[in-house]
Length: 263
Image (tube, rainbow, N blue to C red; front, side):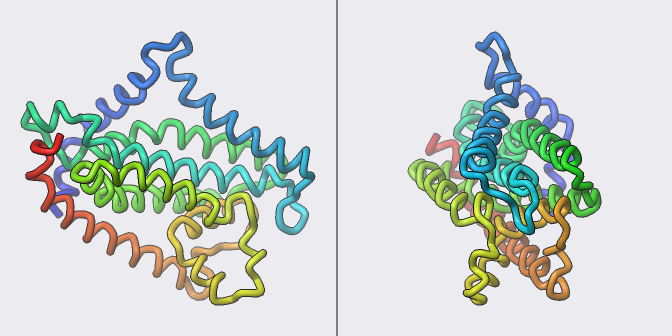
């Protein structure tokens, strides 16, 4: 496919610009890139303090709340930051779109790569915490969940980056949708709370966000949504992801000729 060939052809450029993008976000601060890691880390720790030590919450089957919560939140922050960042990336790189012959298709990938430095840090921290509490990871399942997350990010932002460029208001709407999505996804609450509503539970488990959060969490806490029900949720996830990518690719290619005019 043309998009994949473009990404592969420009992989070195993507790597260099991705690293520069991350550094430049904090170029005018004394701590520099450390802020990129510190802010989300403190955010996660505050949730842990509030729910585990103040509200005295515990995870399913009596597991420490921190072990249940941190993998799910790490996955969500990877998805949220990747989607919001990549969706507005073409406007952020408008000078390249307007003035230089540049492969516009790779711009959202550059932003996803820039956000991945923090995301991988959070994945590592969540793994260290879980191991500290005696929960050994299923490495293959964890790697699968992370790879699946980035495949979904690329597919989803192929559509949202194009639409946000042509319709600037969409990026603000997307921010609201992602805020609602956090609370609709079982990150701070357990999906077993919906056990009395089987239809709603199955629909929730078919949602890509729920699938990815649960898959990464399962890699530490047992269970395996990937193979559950003869892999039905995995099939649904990849059908949705591929469908979104094909639709987003169509929208991107159709809108690309208008990018320079609207920026």
